[in-house]
Image 1 (tube, one colour):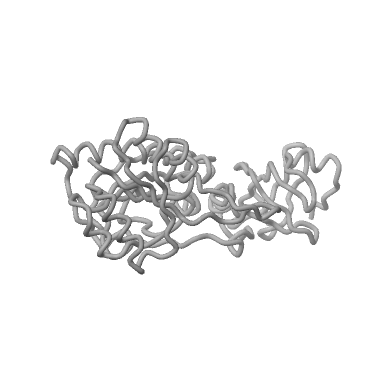
Image 2 (tube, helix red, strand yellow):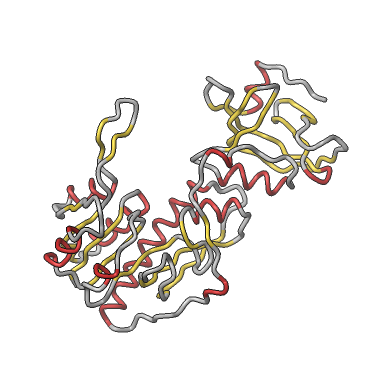
Length: 306
């Protein structure tokens, strides 16, 4: 089976590596154009491009998908199937129609839940207990195609989006191999999604960073762990904005207003939340300082307790 792989970030690179290790015939790789990164703004390759070049796989980086260039390249490669994993581009119908087995995708949610971008982060932010990965056929509209297989996993109570990302990228790679083998064997199912149960999520930005202390301790905790490694939750403390990296539940109760510092010591900062409950901040970063435990920070800085 001749495969053209389309993807860009680390999540996609895990799937490509799995295909290479499993000896699939990857005849070409499409990835986003190189972009300047870092303080020096030097041009850098995507993780998928780096992996493809290391393995001698031809790399294509079209600027557009609808001007005929990508279509001509794909036709020349004559793939039996397209594998798309976090490519970052919508494929037009004429490209989807080229391979005889169509195009399949690995999506980091249990579709039809969390169609769109950043499904991993939103699963943590929303306090979900379970998430997973889905393989599906691509359709004209985003994430609406028939599903093939799903794999589920529990989300740890203190698991960050970054940690969950690392687990799901490997789960997705494993599921992709199973999916391709069964498509080749003619045994893969094709299950229409229940569109009435669909939900959509969007990319994150720094506007979501501030902690809302008028929420429950669990909602605040999930906010903190859901925004790691980026863009990271923030809180205001004595007129300064701190980045917040870790928190834990307490058995404390208070009649103080949400956002009030209830206690400050070696264990961290205990802060009032909704309903009279509290949450303890255990790791933070002051402006211009390194990330550290809240206890270490408090040993060198006095915080007023109301």
